[in-house]
Length: 517
Image (cartoon, rainbow, N blue to C red; front, side, top):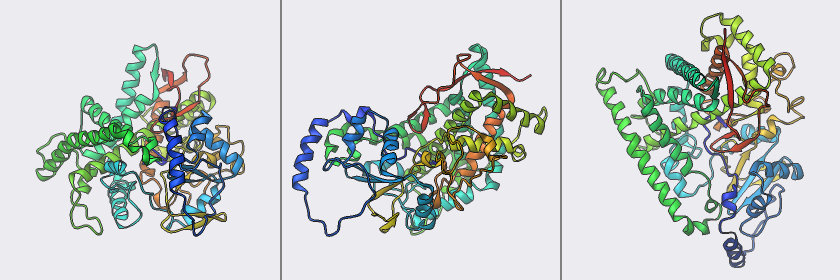
């Protein structure tokens, strides 16, 4: 979900395990490289301000020495230097946009120029089959073909409705798992684990068109997790000269890619057989994302996607929508537990709207308070702090500063959602602001940027509509079925966070649930 909901690991955050490695070696190399690479530049760029860094390594050591998570360090930098700043991370120039108007100018007004992707370490491209996925492709004909296929053939409103039965089945499974877990643990349940299971069930069915038992679902899930771990940022991404010291990690990347292809290709072939021989596979559903990919025509290419490209495209579909959605649900439930009056009001709206029947996604349109709760949750606790990295196809200027083509352009999502010039009392979780408080926001950012949980502009999350359906429905079913309270009883919810594949709760949320009478 941006984050985008199809956003995977966003640009770098510096971890403590990275910064202690090769410190002394890098210092020596820095001195040597600085001496050898001094050249006279014909024109000095007027980059946005930022903390001065060391030659070659830039701000990497400063981030490491701060001892703080990257985004806490970034908050200090933007507070000092302003809402458009530059960080130098080795060979990477990162320009961060933390202002709503600048984001609108860059991503909407100048969107045709600001919608490509930066160059990446070639070993990273292996999982996108050489940048032939929707998220990774550079802005151009290939990207347009891939995105058009995904949006029109899989993520349109009419197509999403076709999977209503899949979602209902997954919701029932989630509720039953919560009940079983609560019965075994004196009412205590883990939130994100159960939410993740439900959304993964939905996406697997949509992706493969095949019903899987829980054991196979877990196997597919583990393969997807291995991919996310393999693409986690490393220090040699920013200092390529250190790459000889990471040969084991690069070898592991190749192993994970091989395992990914060997595991998923049989499912691809199974689906292909089911299409060629209707009725031969009793587990097959009527339609899947794979169906749209087999004969997909990509502009400028004569051949249809290879097995490797199919694996990358379906992995993108699964990974992009799983952790972000589950994380959003966990943060949403945390807020409802911390604010019992809001939870009670939401339950009353659900009860008055649907009575004793199970809440259905059609009912969501009749629940303005539920919609306000979800929107406020996405403003207050976005699942990712950076939208997927942008780059410009030609140099532009923003706020009087140069934005070169070799820079990573980042949209800093929390700075916008918590901006006191845009929001009254932004630290407060207050869905009422969207009901009678006179505040609103177009989450697509087309008219005005005030919150961008799904990214913004031409590269906005293609799964926006699907993600909002899932989040609304999951929260509604969970609140309809159970009364939620903190665990341990009487203890405040801990809203501290940490970076994993998404921005997760530092201490995963546990709660006490009580079936509604």
